[in-house]
Amino acid sequence: MENKNIYIGIFVIALIVCVLSPFLASGDPDGLEASAEHINPESLEAEQVINPIMPDYTIEGFDENPLVGVGCLIVGALMTVALAYGVFKVITTRD
Amino acid sequence: MHIPDGLISIPLCIILYIIAIIALYFSIKWSRENLDEKYIPLLAVLAAGIFAIQSFNLPVPFGSSGHLLGAALVAIVFCSPYAAIIVLSVVLILQALFFGDGGITALGANIVNMAIVGGFVGYYGFSTLTDKIGKYPSIFIAAWAGCFIAAIVAALEMAISGTFPLAEGIFFMGGYHAMIGFIEAIITVVIIKGIESIRPDLLAYNR
Image 1 (cartoon, each protein chain N blue to C red):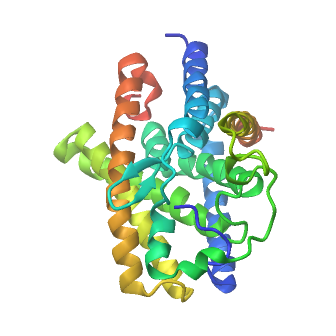
Image 2 (cartoon, chains in turn green, brown):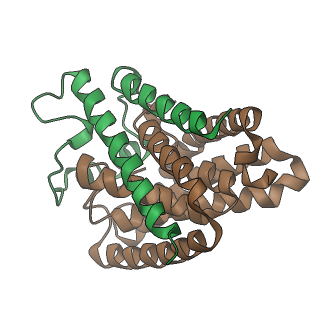
């Protein structure tokens, strides 16, 4: 398989995961939250320092709509591919 | 395993930021010497894949869930922990800034645990074991250990911060992530087996 097709293939798999995740991913607390719930539940109440625009991969007020979650994840995947590309481009460019 | 704000004390947050920055410096140095432009697209799409798959929590027993970290995966594909440290850091920075997944004060801690510990344990676990027990068993164990040891390090950070008592922290964090590590191990083996069957030359240990 050609390089270009491999890259497209991996990115398409990433996008498919983004589409499925809001519908299928487990809503149970992750390992850290579950541990905190047993040991020190108040620690999870702490005020967060910044207010991100897409908290918990959704938009405030639309958090019941999984399609908004899909949109946020796709935006995130595009941001990730762009930032990682840029970072490695800068690193590997020799002057 | 993304630690939010408020669980790690500020002095420790600062120390972990410094460790993360030092590790990133060495990772950039390694990448500059060992990677060339042809790997950029692969690294970029792998980063997007890890971002996506980290949103996909799978259930584990006793009411918890977890997802792939991906540090062992990238470290094994590139045969170095350093590529994994940069890829995971890109993902963790975006998650903290835009998605509230991991606190901004805990970003250094999250980079240390998931990118650095995950990457080093993943790579050195694989490279140490592969001649003794074979490729896929060593990938399985290294990926499992990367997740498990990252969780133990997180428990130590929370103990130093006074958030979790040491024994309880290690018991719960270790217990949950021993199970979550199986998700990490299975998915890592499946992805590397997939790459091996389509394009074995993309795996650094085949070059």
